[in-house]
Amino acid sequence: MRHLQSCEISKSSIQKTPPNPAHFPDLHFVYSPSHDGVDHNLLILFHGLGDTPENFINFGKKMRLPQTSLLAIKGPCPIPYHEGTGWAPAFDAEGNERPHSSAVVQEAVKTTRNLLVNLLNKAILASPEAPDRWPAENIFLFGFSQGGVCAIDLALFGTIRLGGAVSVSGWPSEALYSGKLPEVNKGVKLLITQGLNDDVIGHNEWKKRMTFLKRVIPQDGKLEVHEIPGKGHTMPNSAVEMRAIMAFFGANLSLRSLALEAMSDVYEVKMQPE
Image 1 (tube, rainbow, N blue to C red):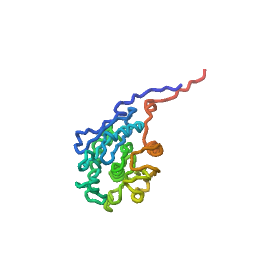
Image 2: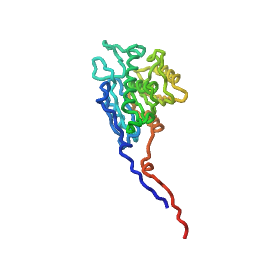
Image 3: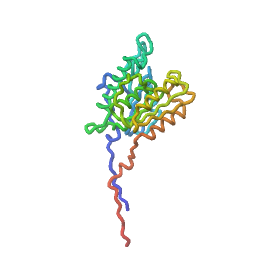
Image 4: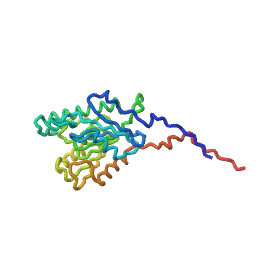
């Protein structure tokens, strides 16, 4: 005869406390709890240049990742004569594009990274004093274009080893760092999807940036690259690309079995034959 005694799972263990926007005046963000009520993982979303977190969080909701809440952050850098923002100043006041080698862009990348690390440390990462937050290995990043560059930069150089990062058409270049790389996180897991008809970042350029990333990533890390034939510089729009993205999350997301956790003090009593 098997006896099962149930153990009630506390609400605080499955519903996390998101960061308070009032505590971070330099960052605007939008939070959405997991669609299945279990906030075990957190996916942080970085929109493309000129987009908004309100738009971008809708893409995250459509993925319906299990046990995963969403946090969409607004890029802190304004765009001249435009309502949207980005993660680094892509244009000067005259509307000319700034290259990655620009000192203004390089400094902004560091500033944005520091803002995000501060947000993680103060309001997202779990600790003995804040158990209602997320362990670092359960935090994932997703970005498009310049937002993808930011996601990869944070995963590589953000001083916190996170669960992984996905970038769509976003590649940091060696020129962003002027040959002075910050310390690289060990065990980093990255996925980048790239359209082969991208007219924003040419084939030779993203190949060069891929070579740079492969050189930077430690041996215990992993970089997956999926090339998408016929795709331009757009968000995922095909089953092939979405399968690659969902496979990455399927391999790396941590999932809880609440049914098993609710079972405690399981023991077996053997009945003696009469």
